[in-house]
Image (tube, rainbow, N blue to C red; front, side, top):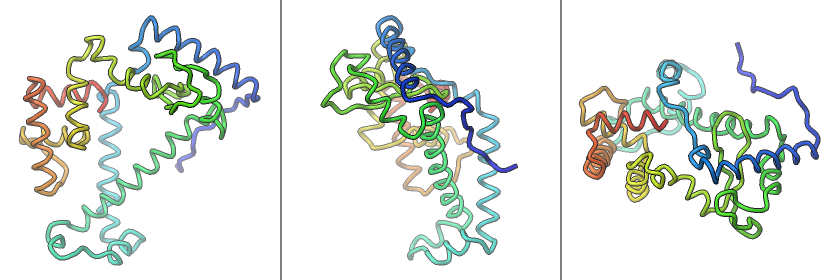
Length: 250
């Protein structure tokens, strides 16, 4: 079965789209005052563990096959040999895995962008920016400001335009409400070290001697340093940090 991007069977006129967005933004403006946490809702990573395992296995199998075959990836590896010092450290199946993983990332990015066009068409982002005069969080006029598009829930609903200050408020609202005392601390540590949530998970898994994906000694050392600092700052164990990442969908 070939993949086919989901497409809506409903065709809205431009006026219908504008009226829809006006009601939609009014809804979130009221929620911003009453239930600000509803502007940043994420599904738990546990909900998709089985699917993600299947995807991971598929990537591993596809990359191993590509590394020994005679296809485009094998030819690409041959045309781009590793420099001295890396040849013995990066096996071809891992190089192929990285290439496949990057292709998947680009595919996911394109498909996720297409979800905004499901209801609103090719000018979705422009329509969203034009449909709101003020940020639903701060009340500040959006005209002349840097407008960011934020998805309250990643379930197909359109993004809402917010100011940069409003977006920062949304991202930090869990800390502000006291719902999650660790989010802002870990996010700040992540930014300071230019690291990712994936690296935090990798570092925790390595320190717990759990099975991990291949990684260079330098990458693992950096990930473990990140995990140690995160544990020191939050008071959480490395196992609890992994559980925290799962609960927040990271």
